[in-house]
Image (cartoon, rainbow, N blue to C red; front, top):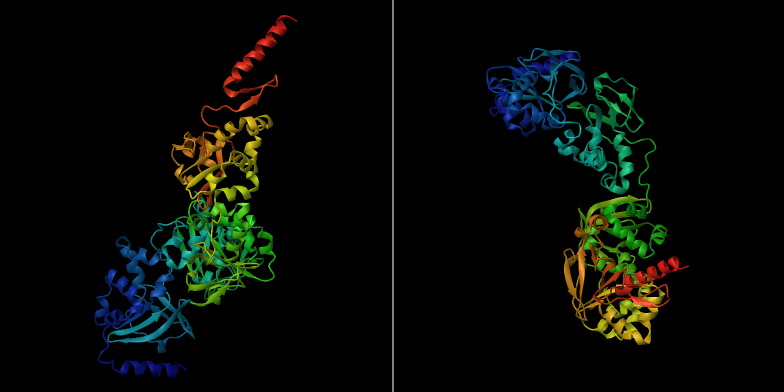
Length: 634
């Protein structure tokens, strides 16, 4: 064996290089695989030596080899202030003698320009310094030989530049750790891992490692609904303290912040934890610990995913809160969970519902709109499991509403005009795609009712409907419009009390009821989103109602959500169901009956006679006077 290798080496020395072969410096400049190494040699002022007589042996790391130093390390080395550090590292890749692979023997050492040795540690494949493989040996040059290696060689005791990034910032310096960085944020771990006075050791899986978990698993873990699962997974990659991997021993158990353990299953030639995960970049120093890049996501032994149904995912996702409310209003929560087979939900975000226009989404939640809402929601449910990898561009997919949708793209997953923000979310009963549009079925029309017909069918507006009918105002609500109706609910009428209601609905007080009801009709379109500033609105009978925005209401104005009108009417009436769409305008359900300026509804006194609110004080004073007289003259 040795004689064969010696003969091969002698032949290599005797055979001349081709006419196109240049010096070591020339050959390095020809290869894109060693571009970073060439730049580093140039910055270290070593490249001119490699154009000289020689002979040289050069261990030239590939682009990937520099990446494997860890996030930000290569960029740090070539900073001007780190020139002396870079020079020492680059000298360790040069020997002032030619060593072809044929003469290498296991245990052989090669003295470098840096002053210490590189050791040949195996021959099949040829490795130096244990974990550095010579991937392309014996690249010829007129003044030496180049061995392409898959690792940057690091001499014993070498000190890299002092770290500038903490353990959270470090993954952000490498594109191949972008998913890990996003997960740190989604899990809410940034504050924990940057706490003063605490060091950590982190095992960071690459993007490829997360992708290997399966279609949609990694991106779906970013959803708020999966945050507990994500936190458990991520804290299982973090150890307390600054632990250098060179101190680890085979079979050693490492306790994680999650409470479980990682087991060291190999230390040579590469470090492995939990059998499958190889540490590909070791001991990358941060200001508060060490980062180790690993090839696989480290899963707990009891890790189960998916572990939630479609309904559970929707209910726990803030960006899907309106969708959950819609499913609830349509009585579809139970039926969706109990489907005979798996389904695929196209889940519009809150922003998607809002983009339909003011009042559209909220109007669908009205009891009278239930059939329309069911049709629309079933149009967002596809038959079977439809992951992005299960379909192709141009495919037609069947909906539960018996219509079909066209797949426009698979990356990102796009059906008709709805594009996925988060696609392929695995669930126990199917798949969900979070989309940015609400899909409208062909020939689906909404709204279909005018103001009067909406008031007629809404179960909580019966007293308002009766009052309008008594006054003969129905035709105003049936006209082309535009009209805006402030519709008090039955609870609002009940709050007036039986005495006041009997008075208003009595035959002889019909003109007062007409005055009050006319005050609730505005002959123009007034959307709730225009009520964000103080204004006066003229009603049908000529008087005005005032609108107060939430910014003028102190703490009361802070509690409204994005789908609720941020205003009150006449200082006290809240819009409990704003912007109910009708064909001729809008209906706003309110929780108080509005009283026109100057009109005082009758109230019952202690003498069982009614008085107006303007005389309430006088009545009260009269009662007090009577009581005082009774006490004075018993």
